[in-house]
Image (tube, rainbow, N blue to C red; front, side, top):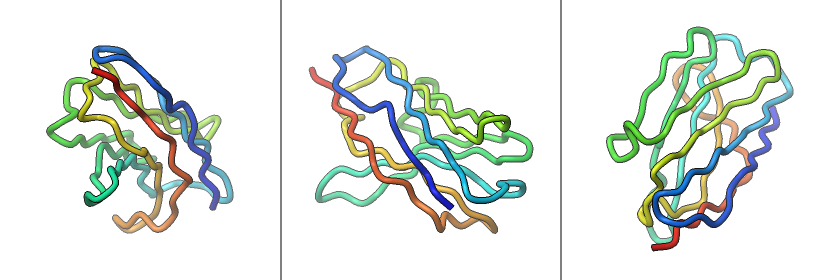
Length: 116
């Protein structure tokens, strides 16, 4: 399984970014996809997850209402639309996938920096 994340960058407070994660290597039926983020010195945080089959989503409280996770089954791509970004959203963002409720496969991170 390979995951390729992209779309990070520098944005001002209140701005928007869309992260993409291209997945390959197997079919993802019955698997979950997720976005996580990490700041140096802090634990990794789960940001949003989505079930591949039904598109059921779950969000961290800190991003609910601002971020939207979605998936495109035709292209095996997962997106994270981030709006109204805040400096606290600054982190390296990772996409991950796996079955049985576990995220066993991880992509490389993409840096998101929100300036105040």
